[in-house]
Amino acid sequence: MAKLRETTPALDNQVQGVANVAKDVKTDYEVPSGYITIELSTNGLVGAPKRFHARNFDTADLLNLALSENEDLPEKVAKMLDNLILEEDVSVLNFHEKEVVEFLVRLYQAFYSTVLKEVDFPWNEEDIDFLKKQYGENSTEFQTRYADLKAGREKPKVDIDLAAVRTVDIDPATFRTDIYLTEKATGFQAGFSFPRYGDVVVLRNFILQEFRQRDKEFANLKEILKFRQDAEQRIRQGEDIALGRIPNIPEFERNKYKEYETEKSIFTVIAIKALHLIMIDGKDVSNLSLKERMELAQDPRLDYKMMKVVDDFYKKMNIGLEGKVVMKNPLKGVVELRDYSFRLVDLLQAIRLYESDEYSIDFEPTHVQ
Picture 1 (cartoon, rainbow, N blue to C red):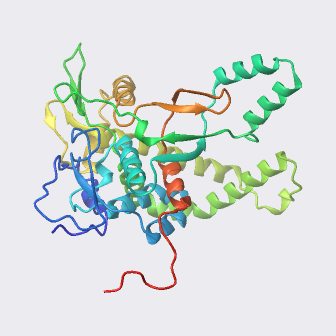
Picture 2: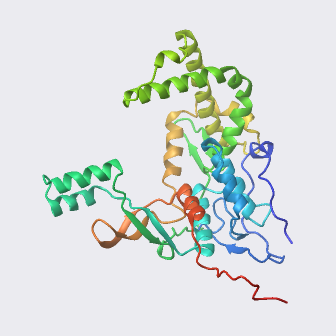
Picture 3: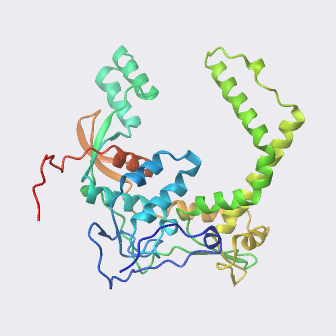
């Protein structure tokens, strides 16, 4: 029997190169009770394998998530979801983010409900035009309701039937995750892999390691600047705060910190480019460490124009759940197709707040052997 996962891959393994993903998990073992088979619409062609097995969340999983800071959330989510997966060689770090979302939707359908209740309705200008015609554009009713919608005082909700949510069909004969760009004038070629959910985790840990010591040097200055900025914002909102009691930072110290933050930003941009770089000038670099690929990523031929083409291509990569969902418009009162993007945070919140009616409460055991 396959053993349960306990941790995500070590950082050293994460940054060595693009992981080799098991495209089809063998099932020559007995699947324990409580696990279900997961088969995503990507059919093993992207980052997730064709088939794997997962269990439901337990209290410890969700409690750990609830206590996490925002910057720790992606890594905590990845570890939590990996712990749900039976197969050791399957990690959501290697999934495309849309595969992670579809995985979570399948879990919700299997263990909680086929209906996702009370989600925020994605109203748009068509709905505003409808309200204008209904009330009259200059009417008090329209102006009040429009203002309430914009300010979030009115939050129309909708239920989504997950069984009716469609997935994107992928043609195995034509679909590709890696792309190779050739500069027509010079013949220079570079290859890139698709963005993975784990990218943000790998980058954050890599940057923390690279800048750990200097981050400590600027930690106190950063805290004071943030505290002062928050105070200035609250003053603009009308709060009475004694700004003079907050230490001021000399201009040269501010400039020094800005230069450091700029340096980190440039480093991050190069690291992102390097993370997806798999080939340059005919040489396969996918198995090099992230630091080694960063040196190659500074090649001036990998310029903004090329990277924009790469970025645009992957933004248009259509996989996972369809972007249009059937729902009842609470403003118009009709069922229609609407643009809707499932978000991990919303799905996790729905799981955490779910109230089950599947259990009966007794005061004596009813099944005694």
